[in-house]
Length: 478
Image 1 (cartoon, one colour):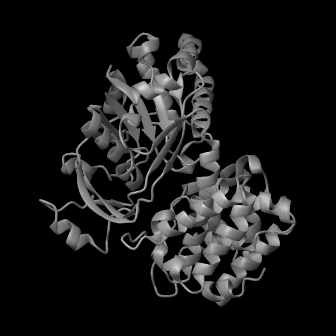
Image 2 (cartoon, helix red, strand yellow):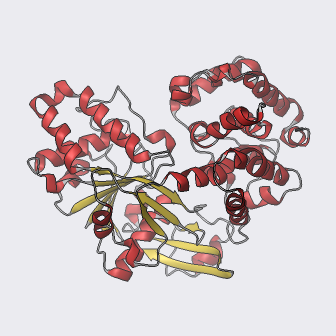
Image 3 (cartoon, one colour):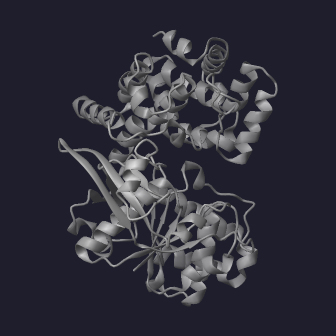
């Protein structure tokens, strides 16, 4: 069994690869993973130099017991950069044993880019690369419906499988001229032979354990700069595709035969809404606020005398009331999340959460902001301050202690922020960010239309610049 994986970041290495390793060892799943780099860069070179092997360190509490394990991940069979070897990328589609496609390209990754062409080698976006791969598969096996893929996207987007499938069909339609007579039969093959599942993933994966690196490296046979640290807790909810029977999915991906926390369902939305709102939502808001306040670790932020209460305010008072589940269950889940945030064994760097912060805010916090306003008649000031902190973080420069700020997002979003900050006017920054419908907010439209949001966001940006983050949080009133 071959799995094609788009993405090489810490999360996939500490989650999907770890799960596949467990399935290989416990039930003889006998799967290998071919890693494909979704963006330009040379970050696969180190993985290749290590023979595509690395280690995962699990640290934390599980059922009240301290966990501290190290395992070698040996299930990666290839690491391919399509920007350097496009032929090797397409060749992945020729393996008859390839059955699954997994991805984690962040929330910004599953979008339709009309500039991508079938003739690009490769195109920029992940959905376009995937469509090319599917087309090569279709051509290689002559449209054999038994040679389709089961697609398991791990991006934290509501109904990610449906959105990815929609993007693929948009590319097929936009490439009609290039596909020629293959356009219609290829589209039909994708509809019949490929199964786009919606999934939800949950595990905190901080990445390289800087604090404990020396002690952990001493436990290894040789140095491993790709060592990944993660919490023991994990959850993978997989909603089967509409054209794939649930029992067939379980048979082909038999995780239920292990002790892994993998849930198969016909509806992942309740799991998704709760997790994205009460874990990822606070993460996205707390990270820029705590970082600009001079902190670096999630745990330290949660335990800080000023930032800690701010985080709990966002979670318990602003986001939790927007969910439509029993309050006691939500409170219990939120308490568990706070306990995970405060994991004494893992130093989760705030900066590791800051990648693509604006698209993350759009999916993780904006729905809660709008629901809160609808139900309470006022804006959630903590969430809005989080957005203000993201805007200031994207300004770049240096933190008060001299640490360099390096925002990382879609180059178009970074250019937008750079142009807005060039005005030197916080109000124009707020207006410009909220107006970025095509780049950031998409179906939510121009957010300047939300009564009071532009002024409140501008006030937050102005206060952070003038008074500093810590004083701004202290002055946050109900």
